Image 1: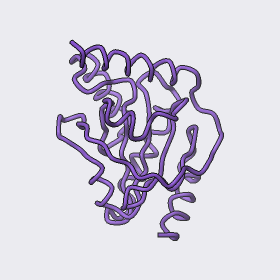
Image 2: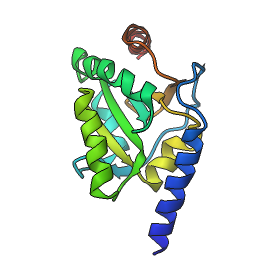
Image 3: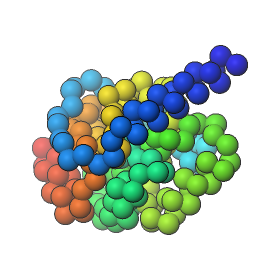
Length: 177
């Protein structure tokens, strides 16, 4: 019961925070704190911060099922995921309004949106661990973080971007690695 209440609180807190905005153009540089978490992906596989060691640079895109700017940029993100060598670059999505252990209807909705937008990359479900590791300062969706292979957040970007803008930023960050 206690776990259910915490999950409900986290879901409500995230929903309230994320409803305050959707797609602002602000950009900032994140701190140097490393990330530690354990959650599951859309297929129920356990994922930890070790996922960042698989590529030099990971783009973590926080999105929501109700966010039109999020959904609009996901086809471009799907293309980007396939255009880079996976040893250099990968994309991970975080479905911010679908909690780990969610009902099947919520999971089906998120899966359908992922399929419909050709966002063919790993998508994680929100839980307490992931929320406290990465999302406590997220105030709107989409929010995107760039993380290096040691788990350090290099930059965060608020709002949806065009594919060319993402490519420029990805190439810039890869050149710095």
